[in-house]
Image (cartoon, rainbow, N blue to C red; front, side, top):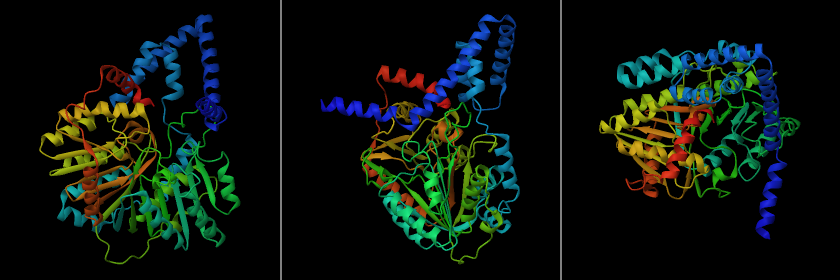
Length: 515
C-alpha cells in the first residue's frame, strides 16, 4: 500500500511539473505540424513531388555539411529509414543556431571588448621559455578570443571547500557580483549565498544572477527571476524554456561562473544545489572540484559572463566599466586562460574538445582525467589510445554510482576500446564523480564544466580554466592520487558488457550526438 502511494505520488508530481507541461506542449505542436505535413504529402501530388525534392536536398546537405562524422550518422539513418518525414524532423531539430538578433548582439558585444588583446610580453616569454605552452595559449587566443594572463589559482577538491570560500569572497564584494550557473536550488548551499546577494544588492552593489532555465526546470519556480528582481538582484533565466518548437532548447548554459569586483573569479563543475556539498546524498559521495582565480585572468570570466548576459538581456551592462584593467600584486604565479565554448555559430570550432586534444597529444609522462560521462567521438578516443601506446600513463576516473543509468551504460561501453589501447580506467567507488579535470605532466591543467560527451563538446555553452605553471597543479595531482586510492581500477574481466547491455549501448550510442 505504501509503495503504491509512493508511486502514485511520483506520477502526480511528474504530471503536475513544469517539465511535463512544456514537454507535452512541444510534443503536441510537433505532432500537429507532422500531421499536416503527412496529409499534404499523401493527398496532393504537387506537394509529394516537392517533398521528394526537399528530401533529396536535405540528404545532400547532411552528407556535405562540415561537421564531425558522428553527428552525421544518426541523421543519415533517420533520413534513410523515414524518407521525407525524416527531412522534416531534421529541419526542425538539427540546427543549433539561435536567432539572428541574438547572434548580432553577441557580435556587437565582442567588438566592444578590448579584452581580446593578448599581452605581448606574456606570449614572448612563453615562446622563449616553453614552446608547447606557447602554442596551447596561442590556440585559445585565436580560437576563443581568450588571452592567457597571470594569476594565482586556488584549487578546491570538494564542493564543501568551494562553498566556504565562495561565501567569504561574496561577503567582501564592494562593486559588483556576477553569477552564472546551470542549476540553482534552494537549500543549505544556495540559501546563504542568496542572503549575501540580497544584502549586497541592498547596499547598492550591482548583483547579477543568470541561471539556465532548463537546468532549473525542476529546482526553481517558473518565475523565480521575478522574486530576485523584487529583492534588487538583476536576474534572468538563460534560454528560457517554452512550450514551443524551437531549435535553441538543445543549447543549454552549462557554465559555472562567479566574478566578484573583477578581481576574484570562480569556475569548475559545481552547481548551487545541496548534493554538490554532500548536504543531500543523491548518488553516494559527490566528488566535485572548482578553482578560485585571482589576477588579471579574471577578466576572461567577466567577459564570458557579459557575452551571454548582454545577448539575452534587453538592458545591457556597460562592458568598459567592468572589464577595465586592475592592479594586482606582482607575486602572481603561473599563467591562466579561462575560456568559453559553445554551439555554432557562436563558436566556429569545438574549442573545449580541441583544448583537450592539445593536452592529450602533448602529454609525455602522464595524463589524468576525471569525467562523469565518457562518450567521446572517434578523434578523442584515438588520441587517448595513441597517448597510452606512446608510454604515457593515461588514467580516467568515472563514477561508480551513476546519475543516469543509460548514459552510464554508454560510458562503460567506451571502457573496452580504451582498455585495449592501454588506457587505465578507474571508477570512483564512494559515489559520483562530477569533476571535469585534466592534468598533464605537472605542467598543464584544466578545471571547468566540460564533460567528455557530445552534449558538452557540441551543444552546450561551457567554460573552463586552462592553467600553466600554477601552484595549484600540485594540489590537483595530490587530489588525483587520493581519488585513485579510493577508486577501483577496471580490469579486463570487467570491461566486457553482457550481450544485451552491449547491444542496447551500441544502439543508443548511434543517436547520442542528437540527445
